[in-house]
Image (cartoon, rainbow, N blue to C red):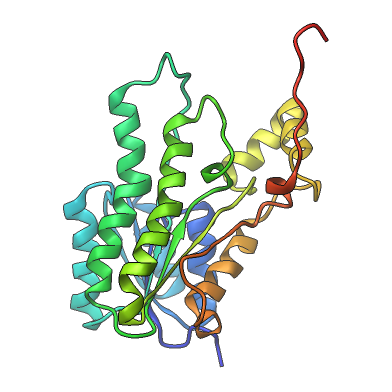
Length: 252
């Protein structure tokens, strides 16, 4: 039997990259899907997979609640929510603006918070929430302030929500990917040898991960195989978190 047979699942940020890989894998594992994304391409993906889609800006509380309401109208209940939608913004500390910080936080953190709140009301015992964090919840990149801070907050949201929902039998876990070969990163690595070298130098396994490798973890966390796992973040990072970095020293 497929591992997600009959499970009713919402996946946000599903139009491309990791979200698309999760959607394809969930469909192959027998889940019934509602895919959400601000990108209208999500509708073509849903048609190709034979499932439902909604175009929505989940950074807005009313719109992520609308996605959950659509699931209620379709199915009456919900088994799985994958809070995958996320964006980044590069800026130094001096350059960062309040609007850019708020935009990243609204997409990366607030969508997961309000989505989890609304989704849990439709879930019974055995429900599962899967959040998308990052190795940058633990590590830091100095020109990715809102991204790193928001992903750290997603990690803590995972802990708090897991405790809040434990007595209702709803599990909440997260995935913290390292460098994953999405369309954007794969393009950078192909076009910029120096960037490729930096990425691989921080990854002990010597390659970028594939979106499908992250999707496999999402399937596990959403499935009954992870029935005693909650409040955890799993890091598919090629060994990056365990790496002891070296940095240039003044005068070298």
